[in-house]
Image (spheres, rainbow, N blue to C red):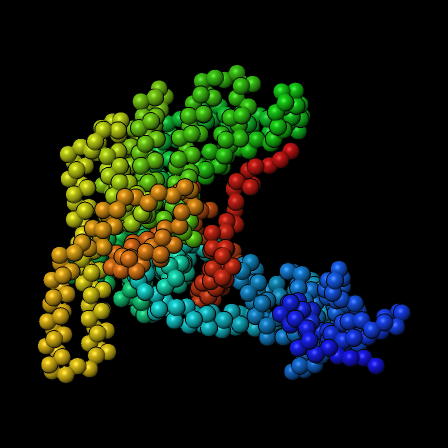
Length: 630
């Protein structure tokens, strides 16, 4: 005779914490001595196990898994198992879910559709996951991709409609091994929770010739198709000559006579500009680089020489390491080669070359760090633009008069001045939205660009004029947002009120008094700039979006402006291609597919990566490839 313990007699909250009690009843049963004790009775096999005290529930979980509870629900079996987190979970096989996940895997890993028909793949599925899953054929796989793309696109369209601010875009051109041109259009936006998001929204084939007219028409057509042409903020493009025509046409289509946003619309790819600077500079230090490169190549030339190098390292108490040799088309690989070789300089008798290399490594690090920062997508980059420009300008000043580097720095300074001496307006304003710096970082950058050779004295007259012009634009932009916010508030009031004629008169009078009061008060912008810059202990970990989210109620108008300025991407390229300047290429297995399928695959992969938080994933991590161990 057993007694089922009533839940009211037990401390329910304490005893029901573990999920294991979904599969056990608490009962009282006799133990080996005949004494009645509390036990856990398995709902599957009715075996009873002790619990409580020092016993815990781990043994109950193991028992439940061994029982392999199976029930019939909707014709499918539910299997009990221990999940990755160590908790008991249930799994019900679904042919539909299995097909969807297979499609997701093929999209995510860029696998050819015909692989699903391969005997080896089907054997793997059957032996690993059971014969109940029937993988789709390649035709079904293609159809599933298009269906999934349509469903996910509808969901994303609804998300973009709800974006509270402007959406900023990137457009760059790709090619295939069949020499077909494609255009990738990417949307950047900050949602209502102040989270920065990036989504590829279109990947159409772009027939030749790639004129400014053709590019602008394709971009505008896609913006209309997504119904977001009224939300456009900026467009970031590379430095191709046809993009000037593209920008001019899009300004007319999108902004009409809105002169302010016409001025803010175009952003050049700053990662490409850094690439141009570095390549110009490296052309002037070829000799020292070649000597180091040949030394590394000599060590790697044979196994015997490599072994001899390792023995020397052992005698000198240094770490044995395979020195990497750089890739001519990737200047960041040159930095990594120098970084790996410099620790061995004391034991190699080429002091002049090594002195040059040490300086060059320090020099390149600034450009490498700036490029990586500009190429990220999971964090704000626009607010850091002037900070990175100041670092680049500073390193050019630091080494500009040093023997052996003056020609290199002069060459790079010419390119720098071409693109950055006049700081791009929209990025200058975005830099002011970082509460750690506000106007100070813009003033410093202008001082370095237009001030004295040392960059340490107070700004020159030209710099003073520039900062004045930027302040005027900052105020003009703020006034536009103030009008918009006040207009929305007035519209909401009119829509929700049902006043009598007398009340309408009172409302008008109150509105006038309110406007008069507002004019005598400091604006959000004035109050923000009057406050000292925010002091934080760890600058790299500071999240500018979290700061503005917390201050949204304090700066109602300015926060709306900051949201749009902080959305702007400063680069068109991902980190893996930012250091080479080479064109981006559609993978071989996708190049042979129809354009609509290519677009679906490219968009879906990006959306899946966004779900997983892996949009900055680098498929060609050159640092890992070059840092070989012996």
